[in-house]
Every structure is written in structure tokens, then in C-alpha cells.
Picture 1 (cartoon, rainbow, N blue to C red):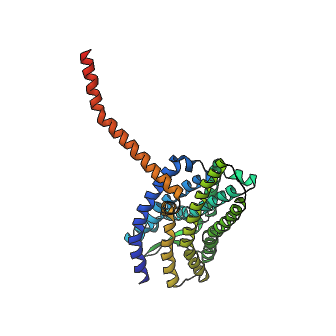
Picture 2 (cartoon, helix red, strand yellow):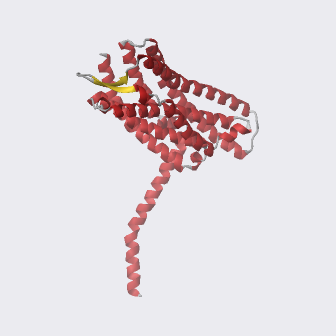
Length: 324
């Protein structure tokens, strides 16, 4: 019964999530790259990296898992190297997005600080350095996966899994800490610290030009806080069930296993909602989106107008040449 509920929810929720997430990622990339007010901040670079990674997760993890659930299409059951590579890449990408959000939270903390050294960290140059460093850190942390994951073949079935029972427990505890606990904990700590810094800064009187930059930074901070809140809503149930499953190892109950699979679907929502959270939550993002749509419409209108007038101009030129 629980499995049928999971398969039905997966069947009807994952494809729309992939489509809406892809659309949101494309608009995010266009906005953060083309709008100067968004492009000029280091936080926007973290948002762009987050969108790119979310797109990879949607197609390398969510779509592939949906095909496995609905059609049984699973190459991990036929190839050992694919079993190791797929599990390693999927788990790394799945974990990278929360840590990119942590970097964005740290960037906003630095921006809000009165410490000059901390504010110097919130630059595009530093962001271009920290993003690949974080990616390397996450994938290095999961280098043990290709070693311990193997393809187990039996006469009636094949499965990509972990054989060593001790490593199963160690890996589960590692996932609880590294994926389930650390990113939400760091997000909460950094956001609370940022709010404390902001409260201290409000007491200071600033020039008009700095006040405008401060308003933009506050809007970006609001975008980040909204995303962190939505992320926590989708992550905390997953983390709690993961902790219970670790406690019940080596054989978690069927109820916990079913809840874990369902909360993985909820966790997947994180990778498709960033654009919609930004749009619904912040006037800055809505204003920039409206300006982008308006500019695109005006450019298309001018181009169509020029194309329509081109034959008329050609006729005028030809008649002038005949007269001369």
C-alpha cells in the first residue's frame, strides 16, 4: 500500500516539478546575468551556481529516479561501473546545492558586518574562488562511494548497494551529519548572525548612495531568507526520518523506509522552487523580471517594425536610383 502511494505521488509530481524547475532555472540565469542590479553582487553568483546545480540534479537524479520508479529503467542493475559512477555523481550534486546556499548565507553575513575584513570577502572574485572550492570539497567527501558501492547480482535480481554492514552504518551516520544536519544548522546560524549584524547597522546614518546599495542588499537578503525557510521546510522531515532509519539499522522498518522515500520527493522540491520563491517574495526580483520582459518585448517590436519597413525602404531606394 505504501509503495503504491509512493509510485502514484512520484508519477504525478516529479514531471511537472522538472518542467517548472527547468523554466525557473532558465529565467534565473537570464535575470542574474543580464540585469546589472543583480549581476553586480557576489550573492547573485552563488544564486546562479545554485540554479545550475539544481538543473543538473533535476535531470541527473530526479528524472533518472522517476524513470526507474515508473518504467524500471535502471542501468545500475547491469553495469558495475555505472552503479558506482551514478551513485557518486548523484549524491555529490544532491549535496552541493545546500552548501551553495550556505555560501550565499555567509556572503550576506559578510555584507552585513561592520568589520572591513569580512566585507572584503563579499566580492565576485572571492565568490568565483569559493564556488569551485566547495564543489571540490563535497565531491572529495564522497570519494568513498565508488569504493564501497557494488553491483550485487543474483539469479532473480540485481541491485546496486553496499555489501559491508559496518560501512552501511558509517555511511548512514555520515549522511545524517553531512547532508541532513550540517547545511540546515549552518544556514540557521548564519542567518541569525546576519540579522544581529543588520540590527546593529540600522543605528548608523549612511549617505544616500550607500543607502540605495543597502536597500538592494536587503532585498537579496530577503530572497535568501525566503529560500532558506522553504529549504528547511522541505529538509527537516527528510533529516528526521534519516536519523530514525540510522537508529534502526541494519534493518529499518517498512514504515520508516516508505516515509524516507516519500520525504525524498519532498526534498526534491528544493531543486525546482528557487525562481518562484524569489518572485513571490521580493519586489526587487519582480521588478527586474518585469523590466526584462518589457525590454525583450520592445526589442522584438522594434525588430518586427524594421523588418516590415525594409521592403518599403527598398522600393524607395529603387525608385530614387531610376530617377537618377
